[in-house]
Image 1 (cartoon, helix red, strand yellow):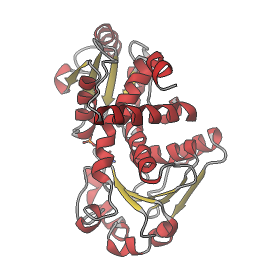
Image 2 (cartoon, helix red, strand yellow; image 1 turned 90 degrees about the vertical axis):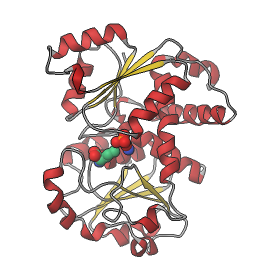
Image 3 (cartoon, helix red, strand yellow; image 1 turned 60 degrees about the horizontal axis):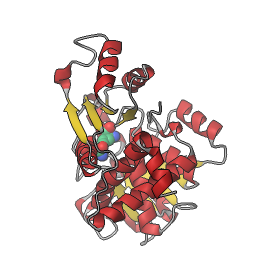
Length: 311
Ligand code: CP
Ligand code: NVA
């Protein structure tokens, strides 16, 4: 049974395959073709935190693939009404996969540990692998290829940037995190990447202007992630010089693309003129969530379709 808890659960070749399937399914959709690859399959979405993009893209993605989906919110009582093993083993009798957004990464790991049903991490405090897949797809579409490109993340060493750094290590992009002291990546995550991908080029700096000067893509995310609301004031002060605004964009090549996983706090980590500007790909990036996740769902549930149709 395969799970996707972090991108460490995929090989670089598997990640490339998922990206190729995503492009394939996206171009089919543009021609009006919606192949029923997952007819009669059901995906459950078990979510403990708010979501627009992830929730809707998984549910519409399943519909387009001929399958169905169920949204399971707080009322199903995960971890409250019955033991985690009873919950998961029962759920596994009914559905073919679970996309889970949890308050802690350990909860998603526990869900997967029963091997009752494939589990897809749909955001935890540790990582956001589905987001990173869509982000790489977006960079690939902008430049034709991703190897050798430089992705600069201006912001927090959080779930989104962790997953991006790993995706870059897997696909030979250079990655730089520009953040204030104290908000860098945790050493265990860096050690895991270095152990598996010793040639990874991951830099960290406190100077955002220096960081973006040869960027191909510049990415930012909220300064205060879900669950960190109590730290918001301290974080806003710490990140004040890390706003993605016209001044910072002036330090970057005019060819650099702008990315944000959304939702954004406009006027905080990014200004209107940048997020709505000509270098921004954020809306297409959000749209790519669905294409990447459709490919992932097929990869996990019907891999033989990929072998027969995409190679
Ligand atoms: N980017 C992202 O995961 O958005 P949602 O929180 O709306 O799902
Ligand atoms: N880092 C953000 C991403 C939201 C999609 C959070 O965890 O809230």
